[in-house]
Length: 132
Image 1: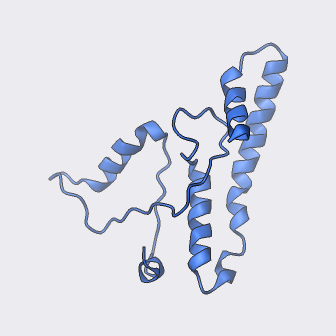
Image 2: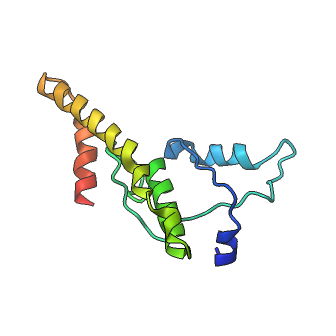
């Protein structure tokens, strides 16, 4: 997007679904009853390839971000192009709940694993994220 197009952004919608559901979700949002695409909708692709740190095992590429990560990186890229950096002072706050959720899930699965539960997929996902 040009700098002018970026400045003209009034609102952003993030789709929060699994990667398997993405195509259908986008179709349901963009195609009306007559099968036409809404010309007012624009899709944004992040300018860089980011690696996910999401803790669940990924069947797709490690470039498939979690919603919180995508929102964070979207605003980081806006910040890079912005003249007023003060608008973006607290971006790390976006990741706060992401980190809290990770802590809760990791703690839960660690405790269950110690008691003899099988959480190999969770820990495989963590191992894969660390390797990437």
